[in-house]
Structures are given as structure tokens and as C-alpha cells.
Length: 319
Image 1 (cartoon, helix red, strand yellow):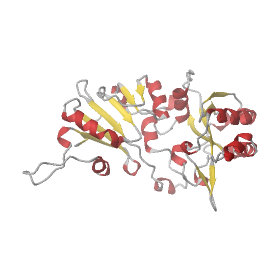
Image 2: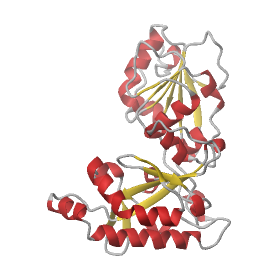
Image 3: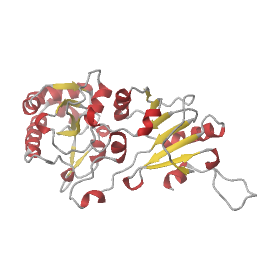
Image 4: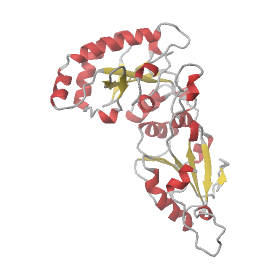
């Protein structure tokens, strides 16, 4: 196994696998602010984290002006504990497309008045709008903030004071509207959590994207994350949710269960279908690149007369 040198010749058969990481909370303690973005978000998009316009690209057929500042609005559930509120992940609330449409209809006049523009696109979980007066807010994605006390993860002012306060005012107005909305009455009757707030995140423009250099050599993206779908369209690279193991060369994957494909990747190395597998992960929030070849698949041992055992995925990722 070697440290990664990201240059890649046209004849080298490499497959790149990215493994999601967690932020390092300690990184924000000195400034009393949360760390900006998950490490994989920063790795793929750059430090300005223009997540909203990338998601919009992936979910719609709209032509997005690269200099338009876009915000993503997401109906969410805040779970109340004894002394604070916790943001639930979107996968936990089971919001239907019909419910999303009805909730947006209720909130639309307030949203469009305060943002000063029309909603650009409504997806089932995500709504998109030109950021307008809220363009300077510092925000965090639901992927980063879910399961945590929202007090620390709420939008903050950056270079213009009072914008976060304007957002909280709009957020509170929508919370009151949705509290009495028939959608939530029906959801509670079915035992589902109410949609009791609106989350804003991902504010940015396509012109701010800074993708890693090696993606210029990638011919195929694998994985179903909405961010990857939008990035594929931005880079004009084919994307599929499921991996085609007959087309691994010069491909990049970001999937939920990387351990589930390690056996296939090992086999491809041993059969010379691949020369290298690059694994990108984020220990302590920092990107780490490692290259594995066929000779790196087995444990090193001083007992040379014994057959070496193959490395397991857990051994590789915890190293």
C-alpha cells in the first residue's frame, strides 16, 4: 500500500472509492462555531460548499446560472428533548411528495416575500430558491447537523449583521403555520413525526465549486447520494446508483456500504481487471489517500512459511 499520487496515466486501471467521514467538533471550539461542512462535502465541492446549486442540478432539468446564489430549503422535524431540540434526518420523517407540495403551498407566500423571488424548483425533500437577502448566512447541511442539538447548528451571520435574525423570524412564522396544518394532523394520526420547521442550507453558486483534480480523469461515477448526482451533471460524467463491476476502470464511487464491494474490488485486483484501488477516507476530518494493489491485499507476516490471510475491510479502514 502506498500514499496516493493523484496523477493517473491513461493505461492505469484505477478505481477510486470514497468513504464518508464525520466532522471534528473540536475544530470549531476555538471560534465557538461549528466546523464548516462534512469532510466529504468539502472534498468534493471546496471550502465554499455550494451544496444547494449542485443539488438543484441533480434534481431538475433547469439551466442554472453559475453566478446565481441558490439556497436549499428543507421541511424537517425538530425533536424536543427535556432541554433542547434535535434535528431529525430526512430519512427518518418519511415525507411524501404530496405532503411536501401541500406544506410548500401553505408557506409559499411567506417564503417568496422574504426571499424576494419565486421558488425555482420543488423536490420531494428539497426546495430551491435564489438566496437573495439570505445569501451571506453561514449554514450547515442536514447530513451534518442531524441528530444534534440545533442551537449550535442554526444559521449564523457572517459579514452582515441581522440576517440570521431575519431567517429565524421567517422560520418561526412557518412553524406556526405548519403547527395547525392538516398535513401534520394526518401525519400524527398515522404515528409519523410532524413537519414542524424549515431548514436552510447549502447557500452558494456553481462558480464556487472546486472539485479535486483527479476527477478530471474519472469516466464514471457510482453512488446514489443527491450531491453526487448533481456533481455528475456539473462535470458531465455519467452517474449510476449501482456499481457495474464490468466497468470499474477510471471510476469513482461514493456509496453507503463500501464494505459490501471490497470483495469484488479485491477480486478485480487479483484478476488484473484493475491495477489499483484508491481509498479516500477522512480520519479526524482530514482527507487520506491510499493506493492498494494486488500485493497489498494480504497481511504482512514474519512467518513466511504460512499462507498470508487477506486483509478485511474493517482492518483496512481502521488502519
